[in-house]
Image 1 (cartoon, rainbow, N blue to C red):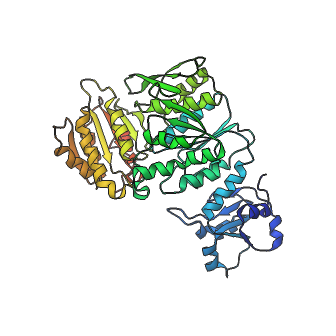
Image 2: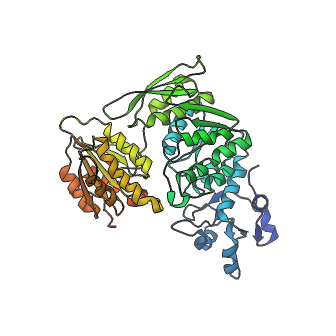
Image 3: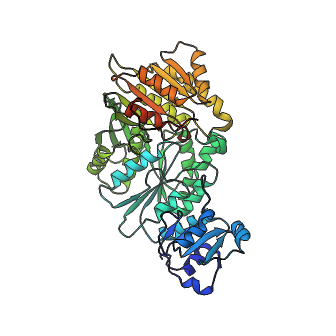
Length: 491
């Protein structure tokens, strides 16, 4: 049942209403966490985020015609003597309340809901899967990478009677988040793309990452859902033992669904063939992907396996995979392994959304696979990887040690306090590096040297964690440093 009154909302949350008892009959038109977009008649959730605390805007919500505000016990104890015209619903945790509201709304719809988790490749797999499913069904998907405990409820609340399926990306950076998101999403199907070195500052180790991501399979096991299992990841294979229903996929013949990777085109994107090793009736799918990097074959395989299981025919799966292109936020914005063409014909591999050790390795391998010709260079511009905690020095050093072994990187440019370790590791490598290496403390100096080195024949990888704002480097390359409209923020 839709949450249509404050009375129903109170029953869902188990909170305390501060205001007249008559206000329980008030209607609810929707929910908002941002007073700037709040509409009259909506309920405002005061959620504390990284930048702002929603409790600071309760009075603004009142002015804008909010039907009520959901606030925490601690805030109310401090502010209870103030006069409020709008009813207040007092709960222990407003973030948890948002998840409960979303779960109540999600239960109205008896449709397949696919949760996409994992250390890397979540957003690309989610986008590919949504494109494949959309060939046959009306699909709701997570926009961009809104995969946390604010973004996921916001997506779920968009579900309506026209949707036939939902693809929801779920992310984490601390223990317990995947389990909490599963309570809101209540997935019927789920996939964990891989287990890697993500958010080690709070998850502690790769085993900690596996335990956290594995909460999705635990949920599916308890609820009788179906898990899609990447057999090429040993930790995922171990975690899948709890599942009663599973569909496997792999680059090897051991998976029910298998991907065979062919040649890369000039842009570094692979041609692949997807087969089903159990069902001869499944017509093999041959498709040229549009995303650079061999790793994208695994994302496409996951999307194909899920799509086929949910009833999308092979011809439609092929069409969906052919249609998919990696999204770019905007000109000069961040992206995930999106290959951009500059005005002078040069190319930029924009992978500036985020970075961890595993995605850094994949990005470098992708760069190495892009053809440049005799006159061209492969240039890697790499910035710090965040949230690694005590593992940061070692993991950054490994990046520097990796580059000489790859043999196809011509120039390596490092930026950020931790990336100095990578720069120093190249000099200490056992064998000489092909790459000429640079280290910069200031981004404007980096861009100046990069522009002096780069020619129209080159391809430049730009990658770093979100906090490093490396999209500014991409913007400067797109506009040209002399004419750049994008201001590089000094660190």
